Length: 539
Image 1: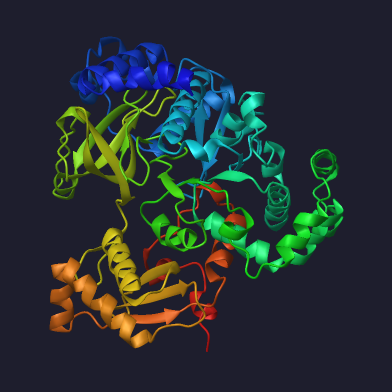
Image 2 (image 1 turned 60 degrees about the vertical axis):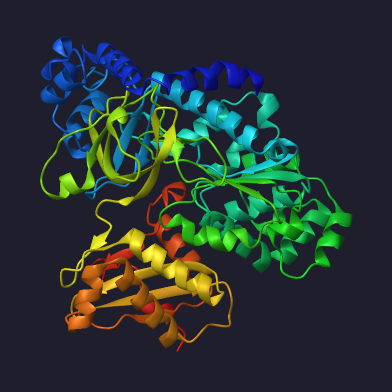
């Protein structure tokens, strides 16, 4: 950690005093590295001397505008998008029926490793006791398949895990090979079985907090076979993960009848009573992920520190959190070039781009990335808030996708408003939400709210729906105006059966959504629903 502090943190800390100069240097390096690519030649990289020239010569890009370059380079090996050939591709869902294949070059993977080392140090600084014991980390598989060009498809997190030094990797209770188990349910059983053998887990990490809720659900539903396996050291009662994984597990699993006996005396399993030593949890806390996190916190040991994982996607890491229990993070200004467009300006059709040093605290912006791996002025439709400053560099927090807005009669309701309203009412009435979704029903000119909560004892639906309705009106004057005039009908609430959120996630993963990227929407139109939530409302 001392090495990481000196090698990774101190240089970045110095750059935060001069963010725009740091960004100009980064952009110059990216342009120089890729000026001989076909994209670089076509867009005048040779003559681009700084941010303004770069913005004039390179239009704002989306994946579909870059897809021809990515596919050309993937199929022919020619330097179409980048001078450097990709090591592998990370796959994610696209706006069309075709998936997106994000190129991960050796330089980009090195940056990911450096950012992970930096974040590890900041986590240690925030909660040293989180590193005292074993780590229960959950991530994607390093290799998930092959493209027709022979290139590997995998997750960046999986590659980072595999490349960790042995001294660090042995602290993780789940080996990287387990994340490649294709059977969704069996993978969870194997992860839990490995974790049950380790009572001294102090660190818990996964991108999405809903993963933690699923772990507890599986642990409680399959407690007997899991405890039997713990007592006997056998794995066969859980399923067949294949000969390679069985061989790997045989070297790791030991019989522990005493721990199995102690665990049998417990009632409902929680993180607090199964692994009472947990001190640090790292996960996404913002946007829709905050919904599941509220339920997770109730299952953790008292005093557990929660640290935001940071704004990141398959394309790149957008922030590195500096402190625990804070939403904002520091953009890796030493690796990627950032541009921002004020939300109000964007909505008015103006596209003036700002640099990091030109942002204002309290404002909301769309963000564009330029990376060494060929995502030039890349627009992901993400909205970020500026939560504060670290020296002279803004701290950013992901808020929502820019299209997380519905309007039935002109009210323009935002995801962030829905989250604030529902969670506020839940706090006031003493219940914890596992999942909720607000559906804009254009046929009825009204909204339908679906909610799954921790307890089987549900509050009165009419009372809660009225309170949420009123809270939305206080947050959105247009919503209140449309409700008052009768143009928008009253919000209705339906309680969902326990386990609905988990079933919804399982269906999405089975359909091809990568689990680590699963971020459930909070606000959708009825016509866009693909899951039968009404079938999960108790009659």
